[in-house]
Image (cartoon, rainbow over all chains, first blue to last red; front, side, top):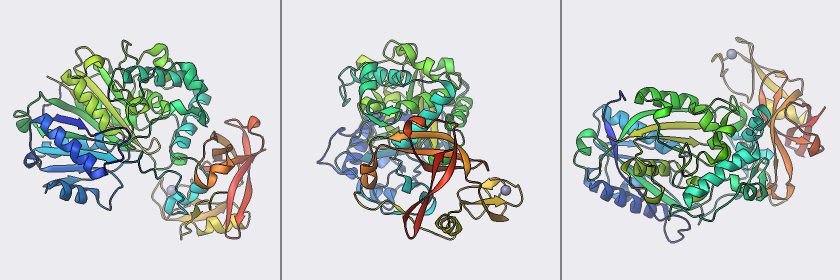
Length: 381
Length: 132
Ligand SMILES: [Zn+2]
């Protein structure tokens, strides 16, 4: 490893997860923020940078900062979908490297399970949405289905191979008491579950839950007085390649090729050195495409890569060790939970699902309809 | 049908496109500088940033780049399922989202398709495609 120790994750926490009808998005974020600062051994007054992403307010940073009583000297509301929080970590690293602040609080909260907006009639399609919305592609599953269909056509990938991912992820969820879905499933169960948008079945799709999370990032100086040992941010890369799925340059290749390359270069590590991977799993196909784009296998080899339960507990490639968006929780923009789990794995706090002696973790967020990717490589001393 | 499908908010980028569809013409843009075709319509060329853009009638021929059969649909589309949403690559090289009509069993990636004009109401005609 050649990278410098500039900034580290020093605190992580979830809010209540699952079905949380009694709490609003501010309460979920406040709950997670307080727990993450406690985890770090910091207080609210240590925070001098605030990051959040959401569409629950005109300017979420303003409402959140006021609600929490935080007046940051650096603020960032970058919203590129579910990968926003991996970008927040990268931006926090950049800000700390520039000497702009010492402690960043990153939060997310959603009540999409208790307050579903899906299917609500939105009668007008403005700007570039006008060329697509009238065709009735269900969002976002329809877009991922288009990518899966193309990958199958181009490379012969099968529904069984996609199901391998759902089954392996469920095995991890069975080891996580916070996971929503903990009953074992077999490949047959995925294939027999209801078809949503061909070729994706219900069990190829993430959960719809409430929940929130928070991550505290500190400069090396501030991290030295944190309660827990630092989880260093070694590398980061991000990109977005399109907004709507019809404008994705190649339906089988995501921007993780670029964001991953940047992150690996910055970290100065190789694929073989990664001990645990937390890969955004909005759908099974998201994972398969990301593994190829990141270079863990060649384009078209993702199906073989995940076969034989290689990503399950005890497999050669431990992945989505909290049970993922498929089986643990998925409150809309899931990326913050990838970071939380990676930090816990590197601290050795993951209990029954701990990957032995994990030193290096790769986190890859995907947002929109395979539109944005943001990759973070984390490591412990 | 449970409610109205989302209606395009026509603007000065898109008016020639929607007017064309009402006249059963598939209009796309062409860059006079780099000679590439452009879809969706915009003020400048996303390839070379030229603002020398002209409109041209597309051949209406293309092939299926990808598709999905939607089984679980929401809102105004709920009653239409199952139906086929696709990305079609036009002969001119641009891609667009659309519906494919006809027998679902015959639909496959790579197959040639031709444009049809699906009238929704007096103000809106959508470009659908059918197998050649
Ligand atoms: Zn041009």
